[in-house]
Image (cartoon, rainbow, N blue to C red; front, side, top):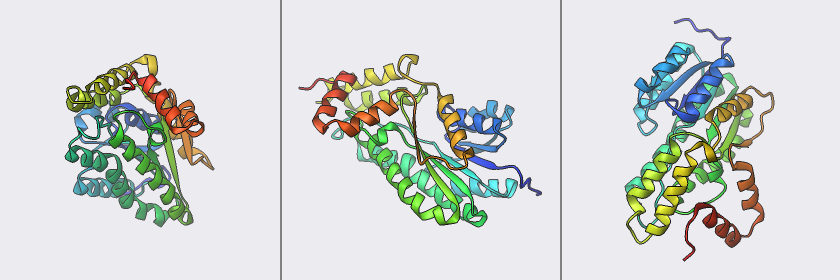
Length: 281
């Protein structure tokens, strides 16, 4: 198959909704050939109508990721941008969350991104160019009640990104972290359902119900930014000559990260408890 080697190619995971969908559309509008990856291809029919190439991929299935990358290379001949966006929030008290769920949270949010990066890097190194964008969260810099496993994955992806940035620089590859704040998407509703499922009737019920209510509120327009903001930021980062290493964008991201850096631990704890409505005793 002949390849259009002048057109840059992007792979975006979690593209069926929210940040992934918005990012895929923004990159396509910027002139990229975009492959939108998700488990449910049927949810991306509207993206296909916009010129995006849907691809079935499960970031917890190694064969699925290998097949997806091979398909893109066979069709397009290159991968210039990888956006590791697939992820979800598993909330609940540490004591309540089953270890299988904790491991799955890491499989989706960390190991899937790391493995897909492994698969894409040889092709980027061969061209001595590329951009890897990891969608972490302001949750990779702060902590909130009942979010231990989710925050652990985002802290981990931040660390992986920093180490990877050092490793791949000699090959002309950039690693960029996007740290969204509150974004209008399915994420907060799913996280609210998770915490209700495990901690709404346990010893942590007062905290669980408060956190679930706070997350549900975050899923509304009142306390969130549109996912298109992240799509624009990703596009800005991958098209910049010298991109920043981090972009904190979206509702609350910059002020929350700033406060975490300047407040003592217990003062920040008290602030977050008040913000989420969690009782202190």
